[in-house]
Length: 87
Image (cartoon, rainbow, N blue to C red; front, side, top):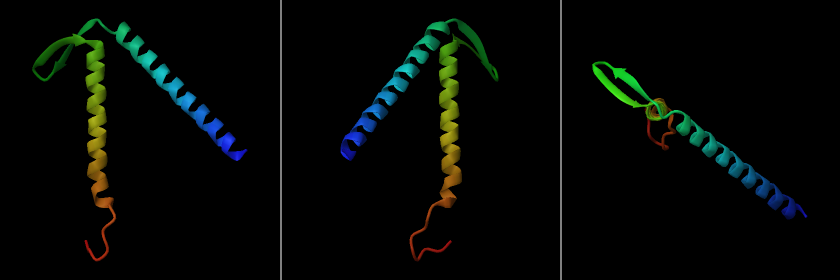
């Protein structure tokens, strides 16, 4: 009986994950459809005309990469050392 409950919980969990994934895909599709108009983006002396969605995507990717690099930079000193190795 316990195994049946576990499988039922696992099915519900998978259905919840699928629902969340479908909701995210729908929101992304709506975001892309609604933000197709071009905007002018300036960085230093560069001026680029690009769709808003591309600008949002590049900004998101840049933030993600920056966060991962910062995490790796600060996590390097906190790694456990093998036995016998001193600082």
